[in-house]
Image 1 (tube, rainbow, N blue to C red):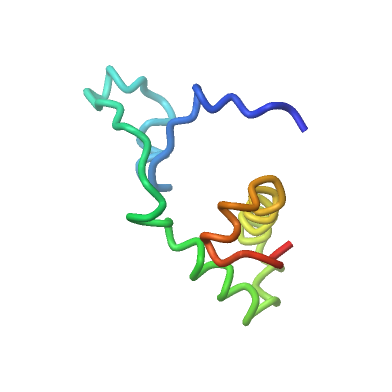
Image 2: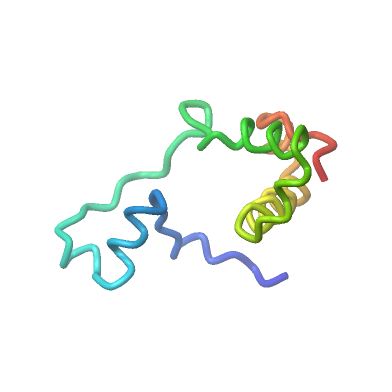
Length: 91
């Protein structure tokens, strides 16, 4: 796996990603914010993991499967994060 370029990660919600996809942050007059804290908000990752576990048929939806695979990859490489998110044994 290639090393992640964390210095180049800027994320937002799906709707706002669509807005920013064709513009720079400067053109939108948006300001970069500092990194968030998973203790404050986990992006509903725990809910997602629990939902997929209870409803495995949902993995037939390509986007859901993609997110699920990404979450498994993160849980695999970062055990502390996996533990905090309640994902121990998720992979």
